[in-house]
Image (tube, rainbow, N blue to C red; front, side, top):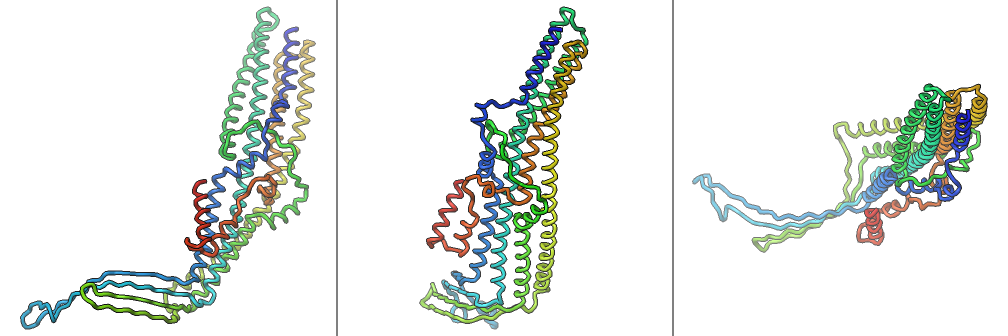
Amino acid sequence: MAGLVGMTRRMGALALAGLVLLTPATVLRAETLADALKDAYLNSGLLDQNRALLRAADEDVAQAVAALRPIIDWSTDITRNFSRVRSGASNTFIRGANGTAETTANIGLTGSLLLYDFGRSDFLTEAAKETVLATRETLRSVEQQVLLIAVQAYMNVIRNREFVDLRRNNLRLLQEELRAANDRFEVGEVTRTDVSQAEAAVALAQSGLAVAEGDLTRAVEEFMEAVGRAPGALRAPGDLPSLGSDVDGAKAAALRRHPDILGAQRNVTVAELNINAAAAARLPQVNLIGRLGASNELTGSGFSRSGSVGVELRGPIYQGGRISSLQRQAGAQRDAQLARLHLVGLQVKQDVGNGFANLRAARAARTANIEAVRAARVAFEGTREEAMLGARTTLDVLDSEQNLLDAQANLISANADVVIAAYSVLAAIGELTVTDLNLGVQTYDPAAYYDLVKTAPVPISPQGRQLDRVLRALGKQ
């Protein structure tokens, strides 16, 4: 009986310590969720990829602008001209007066300038600008994904570390009980059944610890991928985002500002501009054309110089039905984008509703698990006291301790689920960005590169040289 009393007291002390996983000194050194989110933003390869895609979209604007400027091409060639004349009477080839051979060098410049095309080029330019704006929204959506994954990875590391600590405490307790059971068996206080029960409990605890350690290893790997570095000592988040309970208001806010909605709206505008551009392609265009040329005989002294300038009016007559097909295709793409906008709106509203539902469920689960831990601890202490009086067996105490362990594990998981659910709601509304979270990190300016290339600068211009420096800096990242 004395051995059982000592065992139950040790179990009580370790069970109470099971949730105390971080000492004050550790907390002081621990990093916060904000630190992890900053690093996730700065180290994300996915964000780098989508920033490059945005810069590629910026260049579409430069190319559309360039099409409205003069286009000058040069050409040069060396040509060998020769001829031979056959005499019908003698059926022989005669050189000299009846044959020629000369080599000429030619160089020429051709220039053209679009004067008017019924707005087609303007439509294409505006479509390129709208595509840039849509791509910026895609970048913002990717940023939300990156930060939400970082939140999940951060909380999963905390969750699994606490699981491991809890399992280790449990194993340590059961190993002490096994040693005590063996000692009591030697003096005849307990039976072999009690020893076997303790051995089985230790084996199960070892298995549970191995699973928890494996889960922690995977959580650490996910953290490294999401954040770009290994996790240090992590502090559980204190204050969560203030979300309120107005689900309808949150849905309305999401429809106004979620990047997926805004990007879909931009794509509808792009499709409508492309319809106008396809219609204008049926109409003629007016071009200013200029040509300069020079030709010199390399085998003689002859030369020529020529030049011309004129206004050209050109338009399609028949292209095998291609122009009509392009118009129909543009209309179908517009219809597809309108349908996508509708679907995105439904999905965004559903995500907001699901997010709030998950948050309510997580909070309720946390409250229930807090009560479950309290009840399990009371039950454990009661079972322990009854065991001291001989009314309970060792197995009863072990089962009660296992119930407390399970309740504590469920509470750990519920705490993590509440945090993840809260930030998931932010992402569903469209407010999970480094700017919205006020993380204090230097953000990527999506307009900076656009401002450099939107006028299609040439390399020798001051703006072109500045752009070269930007590109070199990007290449070193």
